Amino acid sequence: MAELTNEEIETHIQHIETMSHTSMMDLWRFAPAGHPIFDRRYPLYDIFRKRFDTFGGFTPTVSKEVGWNK
Image 1 (cartoon, rainbow, N blue to C red):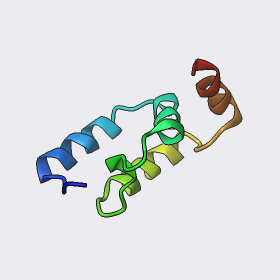
Image 2: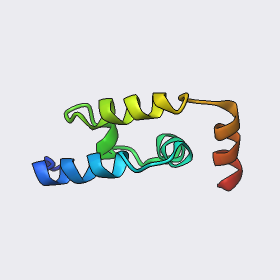
Image 3: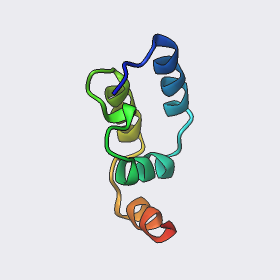
C-alpha cells in the first residue's frame, strides 16, 4: 500500500471530524481491508477512535441500525 501524503491524511482527518456515529460504525464494520483510517502507521485510527468513543462507541442501537441498512 502506498504511503499517504500529509494532504491526504489531513483530508481523512477532516472527514472523520464530520462523521456521524452511524457512519463511523458503518465504516468500522464494513471498511475494506487496508482502509487507511485503520492503518496504524498514521494517526487516523486514534483520531477516529477518540471521536467514535465520544458517541458512546459500539452501542446496540447503532449496531442494529447499521446492520439493518446493509
